Length: 555
Image (cartoon, rainbow, N blue to C red; front, side, top):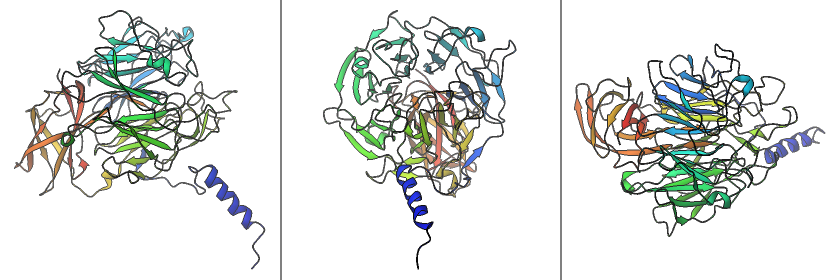
């Protein structure tokens, strides 16, 4: 039979679409039941997010024309979002938080660091040297306080990380807004908060890694209590740095492939730390791009490095789950697997140009991939059901206490644009249910921790290296309990600052009063997980309980 004159071109077109745009399906994607779009949206563009209590997330944007305003007529740039009902409590600010960073101090105070130029018409001052403080609360009374000159130098696109002594280190950035860093804009220094030295400390590594070194990747290295080491990475290079001695301990081999740093943005994660292998430090870096070209395909590789023996440390390359991606987010789930989501299949981070019509990135990657570091090379990634919402520049995601993932943001335009462009400003929030929530396993309900039955009414204080008694209710006659302590981090621009997952030893499981009691041993010291807020998950056969419990690790 002679083929129709339409059949060959149709097949050819589909073939070319598959080859040229591997992330685009030729058929409409069905809505997955794993995603729930919340009735109440984010209110402002979600450029930065941080979980501050079991039911609250602070969302921070820059100063722009979001559709909600304060009583004085200025736009809202920060609010507290309630996960239980979607209500929003505005948190007034007086400095521009555009592309800032942040983290928790050891006492539990959240600090927002840096920002951008003043916006006089909207009554916002410069955020370049600003520090903003809030002590998270559940009574709706906490507010930001600000120190407009809290830092020693201008920082835009810097990274903040909580240290083992409870301070923040604030590293890098640029001294003014720029699309790509340069010698003229670079800030190759770091500082601490609270700080003893009023001046920033030079950090030549951020000169060596120009021009792609904004939002450097920084992770606190696990080790003995008196250790003071960080993993620092920018562009294609990394090192182990002693923040107490201001000394490079070890330069690491370059990571093959594309640049991994803004605006050729990849993402990084300290993989789960486990007591059975002495908290072996392993870093995974994925995605990015090779050049500043909106049509160039994103990086399809990941590099993993084992830092337990620095003399032998080298990168092991892996495929990025078959989905090249720039601007990915990485979220360690409650079971210790890592979820990669959001981002684009080609292009770079940054705003659109030419009247919002030409984007820096396109071909949104709707399909998340799940990474299991316990499996052998070549079998670690698994594709999951796709979302229906593109999440490009300025998208965010985080684990929340009930085991789901909060997904928000995408504002690839220089201002809020709601129509007339391919990818408008996105206010919808999704809650993604990971595969473990579809397993037919009973979920524990935590009834008491460390003698307190006031679960999630405020953080329960615990000490390092101490067993903590936990009681749970569960409808399972033969449960198998595991536990993990998680710090969600401060999330922006594919950078999950201070994110941490630590497996905790479970001892002395005993049946009691229609449930069980057990001792959960807290991590040994502040290098395993920094002091401050954390969330304790009790899992049964790999399925997290109904909610994690808010703890505070004391210094």
